[in-house]
Length: 97
Image (cartoon, rainbow, N blue to C red; front, side, top):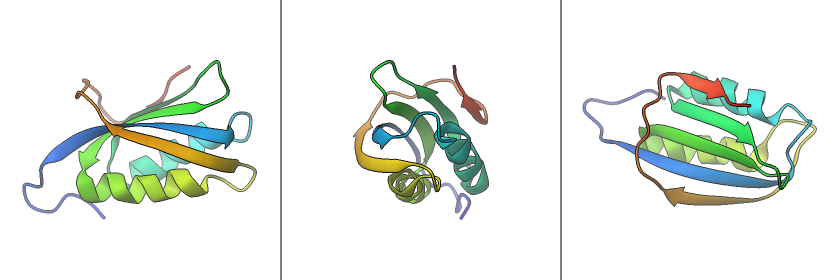
């Protein structure tokens, strides 16, 4: 998709629940985010969820949200919480932890 013109970038935090740990979910998110030009990170949480911080245009983040709701083949996504958040200093898309 890519950034169009000077589209304003925003930050969102996602909390993905279901069977999302041990199924390649963070790597799936990294590939998806990198493919659409989104910066941020994905990390496992102790409660079994995956947290995703993403920075990009609203269109890019909407596209990423669709990927998060689907997940990789072995995942079973049961829900995604999404909220606007403060911008963090990130470059590229990393797997954290």
